[in-house]
Image (cartoon, rainbow, N blue to C red; front, side):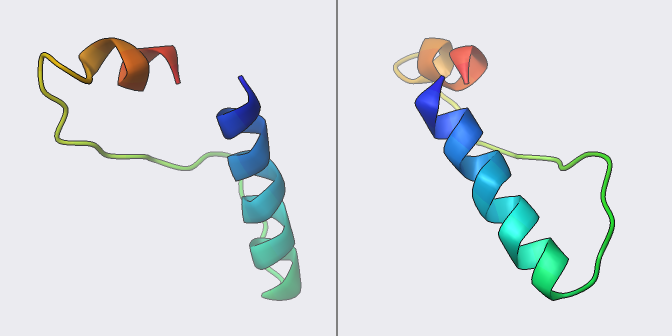
Length: 42
């Protein structure tokens, strides 16, 4: 998914500039029945 790859790319840029190594990130969302499918597809 384009959004997910863009997020990874941006995260890499920001954390590389801050000299931070990372293995995972946590993304939180207060999803509802109307956006649940889109959130879990992400």
